Image: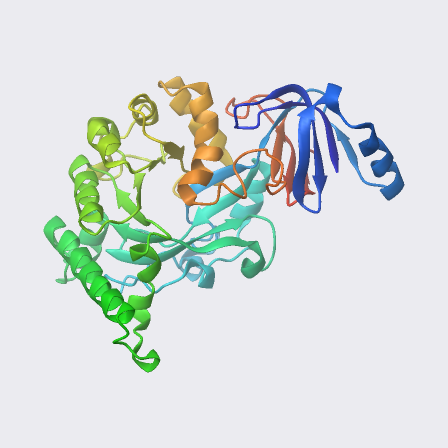
Length: 392
C-alpha cells in the first residue's frame, strides 16, 4: 500500500506536512516527503495492482495505543457471564493469564478500531494483591494467539481500597493497607528465594513451582509490575516495594500523582494515568483531575493516558488526551501519551507507537487532530491492511 499526501505526525523528531508512507508485507518500508517519493514506487503499485491511498492532507498518525484497559476480559453486554476481570476467591493469583480470558468478539475491539486505536494492554483487574499477567495485543482478529505482541507483558498488582474491600469484608486478609503491602512482599520474597535456589541448580524440573515460575520474568526485569495505585501513600508504598526488590514498575491510575510528582520523578517509574471520565465513586479518587498528566509532564515523568475500558470507554481515548491538554498537558505530550509513550511504557516500542521504517504498519488517519471532539477517523490500518474506513 502507498499512502500519499498525508500530514504525517510520526511521533519522532521528524514530521512531514505533505508526506508518503510505503507499506510492504505489513511493515512500514519507507516514509518521507512527497517531493522525495521514489518514482519506482508508482511502477511497483501498477505492476502489482497494490492500493494507493491519497489522504489529501489528512492527519496521519501511528495507531493509537491504550496502555491500560480490560477489553475482552470485562465484556460489554454480557454481564456476569462475560466478566472475567477478577478472580475474587483468592487474594494472590499471579499465575492467571489474560490470554486465557480475552474474547476478541467483545464489541470493545471494533469500537477501538473506529477510534484509531490499534493496540492495547489488557489484563486482570484490581481486586487482588497480585491479579495475574497482562497481555499486549492488536485489536483486529479472531484468535488471541495471533493478535498478541507480548504475553506476559506485565504482572498486575494492586494497592488501596479494592483488595481491602474485596477481602476485608469477608473476614480475610487483606483488610488493611499494611496487609496488602505485607502480602505482596511475602510473595516476592518467596519468588526471589525460589529464583536463587533454581539458579544454583537446587531445583529439579519435577520440583518447579508453577506459581513461582510466573514471577521470574518480573524478577529478571523482563516485564514490570503493573501497579494499581490511586492515593499518594499507595503510590509511595508501591515505589518502596519495587525498590526493595529492584523491580521495574508502571504506576497505573496514579490519581494523586500530581501531589507527589517529585517523588515519582526521583523513582524513575513511568505513569499510566486515568480514567478521567470515571466518577469519583470512592474515597481514593476524590482528587481525580485531568491536570495530573500535565503536572507529571512538567516534572519530567514519562506519562501515558489510559481508558481503563469499560470504566471509561475505549472509543474516547483520544478525547481523554484532549481533556488533559485542556488542563495543562502540552499538545505534543497528549499525542505522545496515546502513541509512543504508551508503547514505550508497555515495552513494545520496537513494533508500534511511531511511524518509522521497519515498524508494524499500524496507522490511524483522521480528518483533523484526533483529540478534538468533532474529528472523524477516516481509516484505521493494522498490519498494513485497512480494517476500518469512515462510512463502511
